[in-house]
Length: 498
Image 1 (cartoon, one colour):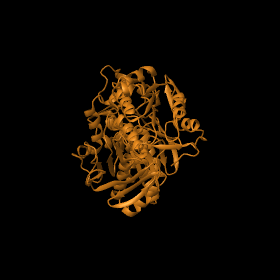
Image 2 (cartoon, rainbow, N blue to C red; image 1 turned 90 degrees about the vertical axis):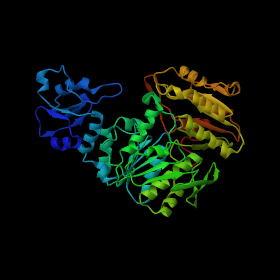
Image 3 (cartoon, one colour; image 1 turned 135 degrees about the vertical axis):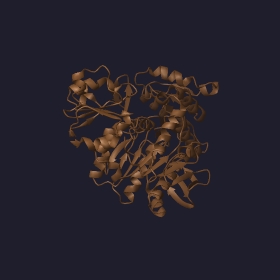
Image 4 (cartoon, rainbow, N blue to C red; image 1 turned 180 degrees about the vertical axis):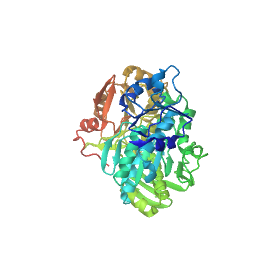
């Protein structure tokens, strides 16, 4: 139960009409979940407009309806039963209301958001671990999992919806957390899921093609990411990647102070250089101080540069941050290696964009130094951006000795049609000759491992940490890590090389 005036103060309505209850029993944007005396927020979604369900919400007992316009054809008796709260954007209002409903929990936390195409999960997870190493009880909101201290909570979205998001933050505060790292997806920014959050800092990783099935244009995708930095207050800091052309763009209009930079290539506030790179890890120089790490690849060096910069901006001693970084381990499903006794290595990685796949494959090529072949297994998701499919295949073929194209999460699409889209990117006959097709992902992984010889390396890309495969309307258990371990003759969960 919350006082109506407390909630209305959070959104500053354009208009109010109807009887005003003193309090509200519940808050929801799902008309089916409305409780007697509750508040229903009619959000205009990509597929469904909540305004269509206002009548149902009132019939279920809603006493307050938040909308962008009062339906012109609504029955007069129903119209007079509720308080109409008219706002300019109900999606944003829902975020603000959810925050207020749960007591604005982000204000009680040091909340750091991470956005970009690649690296979000790794950076957010490592910041969560870093805060723990510094003695703080921390929370995490990520693609892989959500955490409240040591408690694990399954993640359904990169960034939860505002009601779930604010409830999780409130649970963190109640559990005694002082810090939270969270991924901020472009969908979440565009849909105002992060409205009402008081961020202490924001990090930009990079920007490459992704999610154009939703955003339609790269410009809209960029603007969604940039909107996160536009919303930061002057009490927050911003950290951006100078190695990405869009890094400076992200912080052009931000109020955040300070705005800091990190880079592997040029002078920056936080400069990191790769001294040595091998399959066991990297020796990195952080602003001139060398540190051994358990991570592989320049893309991970960039991720660690962001973690280092954020740690310093959070007020931790630089030497303590570097000591903690030296003990950090890779995130599940992110460049996660498996090695057989016969000398065959496999890497499982979440790479599902052309840029991410190129990062993984160029890293593999660098550490192999021309010794052995690279065999890549990859696919593309159904009901998602079709434009990146040919690019994925071209990237895989260009950097591999052999490629097996297979199913990822085909969802409602025909897996063969998805692969045909990928094959369209192979215009070079030599590269087309490197490619096999096996639509059964399990068999594709087994085939790749069976074809590998000692010294070869198998890359299984696309699903990483995921433990299911969506085919048609059915969700089936499927874990690339389990399949790779079994194909290599390893006990699942055993002998992974970290």
